[in-house]
Image 1 (cartoon, helix red, strand yellow):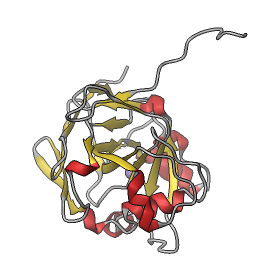
Image 2 (cartoon, helix red, strand yellow):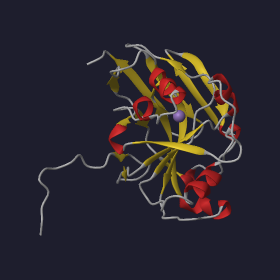
Image 3 (cartoon, rainbow, N blue to C red):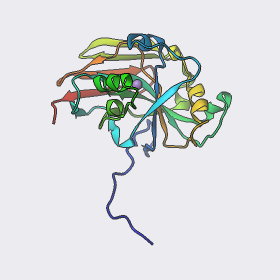
Length: 232
Ligand code: MN
């Protein structure tokens, strides 16, 4: 039997409220343009025919409460406050009605973005990886089990930068609902426990600088925070 030449980092773990064990992160799917007002502020039309996605590596996960260095290669690092959906059951080609059963938990997330690189990639019709798959750019707060939340809809989703309210919306403002995203995505992937979906950000995104403090919350979930440190 062969053995590994070297060890890789283990899957990141996200605490779960009320559980001793933590949730290991497999894949991270992110939905683009899922709030009409945010699509508009980015100069885009919303395509209501189907959601679209980009991904972040699980190695991009960082816990709430930490300080992350201002990343290399950007002069316009942005916050995006998002609802994160953590899957707890395998689903493939599931319809929207049955997709809810795949949800294990919800959490607050920050999809930190090198906006200048994302826009440059977009304009050149290139993939968004340099803009989006940034080290320590997927900040994830502790999860709350779906059974403890109830239905998703009228909860507020908010972000403050240095105490000033910047993003303020309702989860019901999402164009593609949680179950519709899972159903659609399951037409392309064998979704499984460990898969996370970052469901897109409302309007009000903006840049950060070293020393900035981000605080986000979604009604009923553990809050999230992040401090931006100096570049390495
Ligand atoms: Mn996002």
